[in-house]
Image (cartoon, rainbow, N blue to C red; front, top):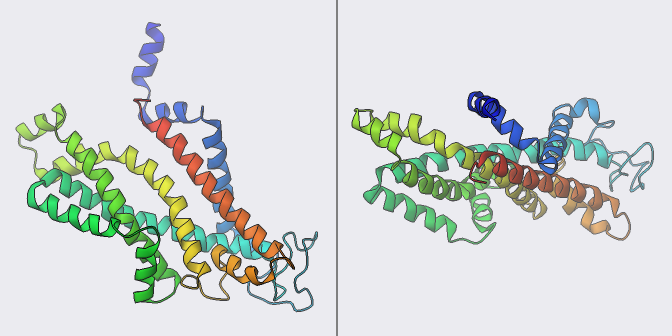
Length: 287
C-alpha cells in the first residue's frame, strides 16, 4: 500500500489526468472521432476525391454510389467532398470563436472576481445584459449589424460566449482568492497581477477547459444555424449549415443532400459533449 501511495505522490498532473481520462471509454472514443474529423479537415485536399465547388451537370442529384459516397447535390457537386471541406469551415468557426470568447471572458471574470467592488458590479451587469438575450438572438443581431460572412460569425459567437466564461471564472476566483496559499502569497508582498496570473488563474483552468469543450458544440450549432438562415458562409463555400439549407428544397427527392451534413453535425456535437463529460470527470478530483 505504501508503494502505491508513493507512486501516486510522484505522479505528474498530466499522468494523473491521463490515468483518470482513459477509464472514460466513451470520452476517449469521442476524442478519437474528433481527432479523425480534425485530421480529415486539415488534409481535405488529400481526403476529398472531388473539388467541392466545381459543378458537374452530368451527375446532378445522384444517389450515393461507390464513386460519390454521399451522392451529389443539385449542381452535381460531390457531397462527401463538400462535407470534408465544410469541416474546415465549421470546426474553424467553433475553435476560433470559443478561443476568442473564452480568452476575453476569462480575463473579465478574473478581474471582476479578484478586484471586486464597483468594477465587479459594473462588469457583471454588462454580462447580465448579454445573458438576457435568449439563445442565438445576440449572434443574429451582431451578424445583422456587421453583415454576413464567416469572420463576422466568429465575432458574433465569440461575443455570445464571453458572459458564460466570465461568470464561471468569477465564481471560481472568488473561492480561490480566499485560499490559504493565496493569502500567504499576498502577505509576503506578491503583486496583484502576479497573484491573478500565477496563483489564481491556474486554478480556474480545469473548469475553463471542460466548459470550452462543451461550448464548442454550442458554437458549432450556432454557426450552422446562422449559415442555414443565410447569415453565415456564403455560396459556393462548403459549410455544414449552408449545405442543409441548400438541400431542404430537395427533401423527398434527394434526401442525401441534407442527411449527410446533418449526420456530420450530429456526430461532431455529440463527440464534443461526450469529450466534455469525460474531461470534467478526469479533471475534477472531487468526483
